[in-house]
Length: 174
Picture 1: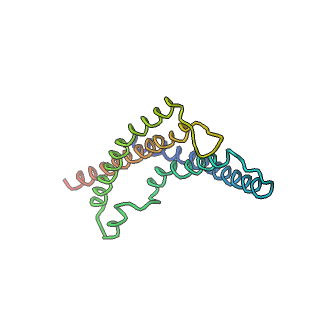
Picture 2 (picture 1 turned 30 degrees about the vertical axis):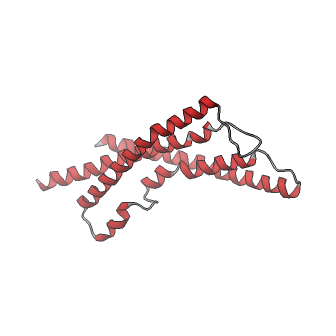
Picture 3 (picture 1 turned 180 degrees about the vertical axis):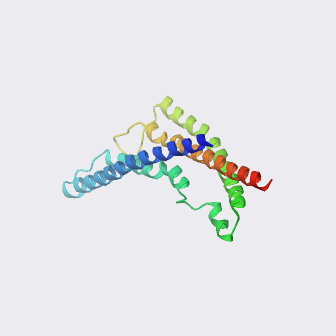
């Protein structure tokens, strides 16, 4: 179906944009860590904000590409364990259908608690206790539901693609 290809194209474009943004985050992380080391060990005055910024940048770099890694098979999945057993395309599609469906359900199930945690942090005006800078915590917590949305989109696309493969196999067999 054409709309599945369109959805995949838009998700791939979003992943490419996200990769470029995260590359900027990596450069910023290196800059902040380098600046913190220079300020701490050469000038003897550590930066009060460096630890929080380092944590936030690293968290974004770690969490946001999860869906992209899943889509490009750069992770270890259940299908990796059985794909080398010379399975047919239909058998692989069944595995993909089940694993994508379970991943989508799990991510959807975790989304509401993640959103509630963000709203709780906003309501309480919760701040980081790592440093004296004490920035608000909700921007960091927003990364979790954002990652879950990206994973759900990828898992739903994978489920649809696997179902289409099974449908095409069923049409060919009849």
